[in-house]
Amino acid sequence: MSTAEQSHAALMDGVYRYQRHIYDLTRKYYLLGRDRLIDGLDIPSGGSVLELGCGTGRNLARVAAAYPEARLFGLDISTGMLETAAATLHRNGLAGRTTLARGDASAFDAAQLFGRAGFDRILISYSLSMIPRWRRTVVSALDALGPDGELHIVDFGRQERLPAWFRSGLRAWLARFHVTPRDSLREVLESECQRVGASLRFEKLYRGYAVRAVVTKT
Image (cartoon, rainbow, N blue to C red):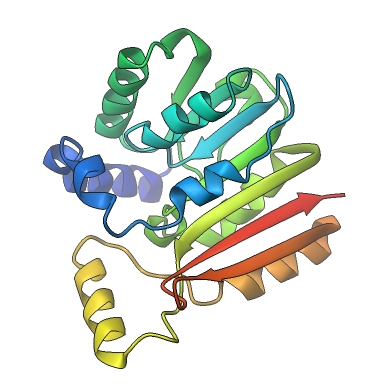
């Protein structure tokens, strides 16, 4: 890893050193739309799915339950989170069905880490708002999709239809955890769709609290 990547990895390990043990219990109240994203993955039979920023492994376990034949892969920059993810997957009997790797989502080599060139589905759930080089992460994710593959994203939105006091309070609180909503996400995705020849579905959830995007390679 580069110096910047090592610095971000150390930051994430520090942030989640203790939080990872209660992460899933607390985050379910405000990381909205994650299960909606999983339900819409529509993974083909025997297909592959990679989660960038897989965290505790919660999403991968849900994907495994919804798509029993899917092959699962997870990437995270935090060693601590990967330890928790491995424990989660082992507890759910999924250790032999899932491959986890440590790496930077903005610069990863799928062939080197996972032994494959592309994936049928890639999901990013509330991670872009924590990744400094988030635009590069979008590029890397699209480049790692196989033919007819889909990139599924859910993250914080602009909260434009929510009261101003709520929006400012939420963002101040998120900043304490090094989380920054990516207000230009739609524009970046539209630009990248033109670059790779893909289509975009973009949906605002809960009055703009969150957004969900699906990029389909054609």
